[in-house]
Length: 333
Image (cartoon, rainbow, N blue to C red; front, side):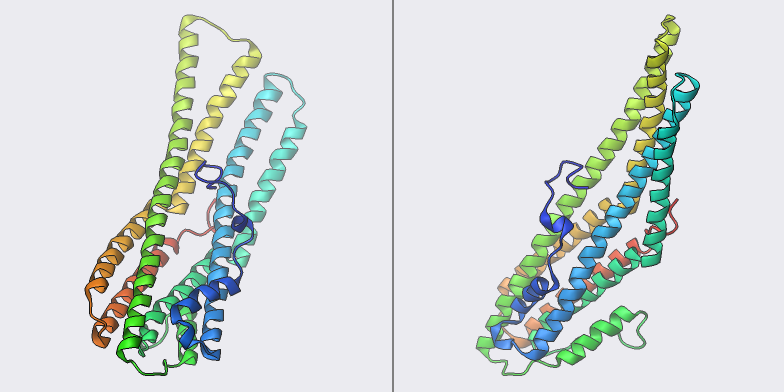
């Protein structure tokens, strides 16, 4: 979709996401070489798998709903071609009807497969697991395990991430000044990485929102201008040749269909909402980074900063999950 909107070129990772091992290595760099162990390797591997699956299912889900709306719009256009070509121009339209039937079949199959395989739910759950595990790392580096979901777990995601954290165990070692200074540097890098991600995401999501909105406006304005042209020709007593008149009718009817498809893509994608959440997170992380830079390498202070970071990350995940829970493909027409 980004390539189609002209925002960037296709990347290899669009078709072949990073493997879990690469994502696990990214997390292991946060623990530091001195903390490497079989337990940290297992925890990082679980995180890498969850993160990789979240990326994969996000790509499948987004590609699915974009394809669905564009194909549905194309099917409507083909129906118009069949009507106009057959009734007005006398064309042989059965090949177009076959193509329309095939496209409708693909849309229905897309819907059925998406619902059966639960692409949207798997994306949401895998992303929540990955973020819960990642947000726990800063506190773990300081010898503390946060209880972010007391009582009965409302979903398997919390239970699973907490089970992985229990298997990881407590960090073993001495929290001396050298260790605290190293952890402070790690927290600073962690916050900077998250801040950079949310700034990029806010900019990208706003660009997508504006570009899709622009295309929708162009389609509707184009249809309006063509209607005005048809009315003007009628008032002036100018009659286009039959073929061109059919083309004018077909294009005028087809443009609003693609405009509506662009609106549907915006509604399901929630690009503006994602941009707003990322911008809010970037502002919070910027304040956290400034405070962390001025903090002494003190255990109590660093634990408070790590807790603030985890609260911000988990809060962002909770807001994202609430916003996306009802935007699934199974019940969309």
